[in-house]
Image (tube, rainbow, N blue to C red; front, top):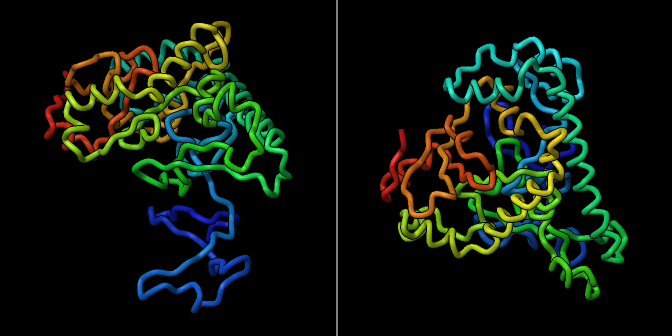
Length: 325
């Protein structure tokens, strides 16, 4: 059983959870009060829930060290040795172009782990600051502070975390003054605006950045897809926010000390398994090309990449897309 978690993923990949009898009014209900019919019952989660913010990616504070399932802080000398010794390449089969791109950014490996760790700490502090400001603004004690979640196509990731768009629950605020300025941009969006997160748009978990139905031809065919892209104000606002952060040189885009290895790159280096998701270039308006996974780096800016998991590739091919060479 996973200590302290309401949801988790077992070693075999089975998603599991722990719950108590649901509430009836303000108190725990009886079994009779909680059972609705022969296949429906109420429960309440009694442990912590992990939440993974959709559409964004921030540097890793810690991650599974290559060859193990143990999470090691990026500030550990183990990561430093991995990069400076060149061992990060061992057992990692990559397309020649992608390998050269990584080698150029990693170089002799000196400072790569520290660079990632420093950016990860700053990103963590940024999210903490955003949440603390919302708590203060709410005027509520922390015990009564509520957060709002909006979900996309999938609810859980491979670690048992909820996949969502997270924000403070402004409906419980007494006319918050900050609403007029930013109208409650989500934590996802505010992290992008701060420059401490990079976009990581993964289809079909792109709502509410992009409202789409993943198995609807009118939404997935090139014509329908680009029509929705052009009309999606949230997606385009998020992309513009990242472009602005980069032009201002803030956060991970600091020209003196930019983030050298993207978070998802660190993850595939750790797992010794190259990227698997196909990519659509959001700048290629009207096109019907899916780039091979290893070609993501040819799209210079992360806000212009939409990643397509391989299990959904047949849907795109059936609806008129083609895999580029």
